[in-house]
Length: 194
Ligand SMILES: [Fe+2]
Ligand SMILES: [Fe+2]
Image (cartoon, rainbow, N blue to C red):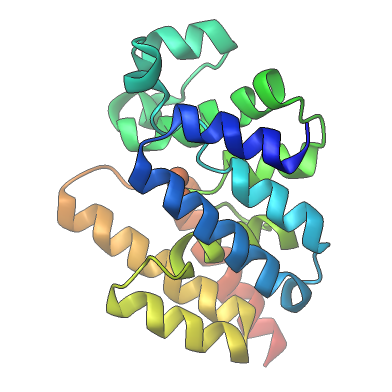
C-alpha cells in the first residue's frame, strides 16, 4: 500500500482527533528517526499504523472481544481487564491483515507502543517517544520528554515510561508488568553506562 492509501484507510477507521494525532506521530517519528538510528521511511510507516486499531470498535460496530477473535488476537490477562491496552495488541494484527505489514520489527513496535518492554528495539523506542511528543500533545510532561530526547534517548524513555505508569496509577487501572520491566531494564542499563 502507498502512504496515501494507508492515510485514506486510517481516515475512514479513526476518529478525527485520533487521525490528527496519527499524522502528528508520523511527522514526529520521521523528525526523530536519525536520533534513534532508524530509517525515516520505516519510522513514518510504523507511526502511521501505531493506532490503526484504536477506534476500530466504534467504527466497525464490533466490540474489541469480537475484533480480537476476528484477527486471532488473544489478549493477555491485563489487556482483558484494561481496554486501553487492547488497541496496541490488536493493532499489530490489523496492520498485518489490513495493511499488509509483514515486517516483524514494525509489528512489534505497534504491539508494544502502550506498554513498552525490556530491551526495546530502536524503532520500538522511537514510536513510544513520538507517541508522547507529537505536536498535538500539549501536557507539560511532553515538553520535558522533548527536551530529554535531545540529550539522551534512554533518559527520555525512563521519564516517559515513569509518567505513563504514574498516569495509570492515578486512573486506578492496572500497571502492565512489561512497563515495569521496560523501566527496570533501562535503569539497570544506565547504571552500567556510568
Ligand atoms: Fe495508542
Ligand atoms: Fe498514539
